[in-house]
Length: 631
Image 1 (cartoon, one colour):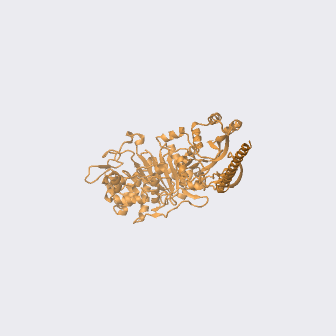
Image 2 (image 1 turned 180 degrees about the horizontal axis):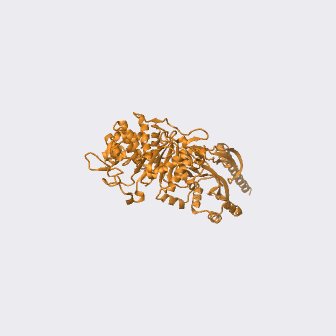
Image 3 (image 1 turned 90 degrees about the horizontal axis):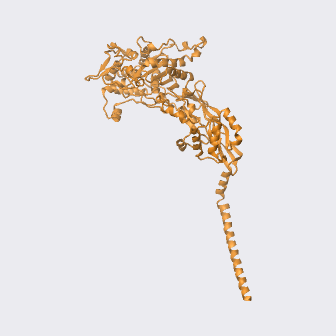
């Protein structure tokens, strides 16, 4: 009995020691764990705790405004109200969206965009934009049903707005929602809190200057991510305001001239002294405001698929054969090479035949003037009447290289514009180019075509206007640009020193001006029947560029046998006043046939707007500017 009790006590004692040892081990492990968490991993957990408690909320900056040369707003920021949802507070999202569709205008495209935004990384309980641009009636409807719309709210914001709509769609451009591809390459710090970016035009070219720098709010949040209080605030730095050379009155004159005639094409006008682009129009156009908050497919698709291609910037990216607008430059090349002088004459039977070849190049007047222009055609007459035979003969005797070099000096085949959005380079063809791209040798017929701006040669209206501006500047290459200045005075643009085209005889500049003046004011000038300009003299050149090829050896195609969109393009380039140039211009009218008839009157209205002011400014005698610009 006693032995049994002793044995039992020993078992209990051993068990107590074992339990004690186990408790000690567990306490040691617990202390070690506390030490590891509190000491070893203290910094990491402290950082995580701070992140859970304090957050940085970006404050988007005000986007810089864009003005024309007279201080009129071309792009502004207007207050707008957005409909936003906090998804964490919504119990049944599809049902909520259906309920909202009964209250306000909300289409399937806007809902689809909302889901795309919802799928992106964001802060918990942060609102997601569902719709922009709520009007007063919609705001009232939402306010009445606010108690039934858990997770729904409205917030004020600034939205880009273009007061002149389609007038500057291609030149000023527009902003749009940042897409996924852009998001991957953007600096997210610089675009924190921002959801739009410049897409085309000035808005894209000067995106870094216009968008500004975001600020931030340091806020304390609870465990659910809701803001408790604001700890710190750093205000954003607004984007710089831009002042452009563009002139609303001149641009409107170009727009109205195209629209009233129901024409497609482009107009580019450049201030001679500065190179400032005062008008750059592509017609037809579109309303850039449609793209700011997201354009619905029902509106976008018809614009995209339109046969008129309104999205194409014809002024900077439309490439056309420049036609006879290049003849003054070919004439200067011939004078420089000594192939011709101002007294040189040729006989024009109405066509030109290369030596030892059967192919005949018919002058444009062949169908109406079978006998040609006679046997005393000099350069002045050839410029005024746009005589192809004279320039074919000149080009054949001069060969391609001097002409190619002169074209290059005037900017054909390269981009001289400093800040125009993605301009096309056109084509100044050479022997090497043809062999490389066509695997064919250069023929004498190619030289003849290049001399009259046909064949392989291509140029944009911007290049034609720029070359005309260099001519008006007597060879000083002033690079065209849209930006005039910023409100801060800092110019985010490097302006190179102007090149100068030197002629052996500097009098050739004024001689060429006088020849071009005959195009408008001469008795047989190609533009004389279509332009009346008693206020100031105009130095000009008309041109026609074939839209379809004619069979070799054929006479000029009868436009009546062609569809409207197969007819030749009409071109007109000029500067004015002829003796003291202030402005140069290029007009291209798609399928307009005659440069003088289709392009000349449009150019005259634009020149008037710049030199004489808008029509309302010409009414009173004290506002009449005609004497100022009369040569």
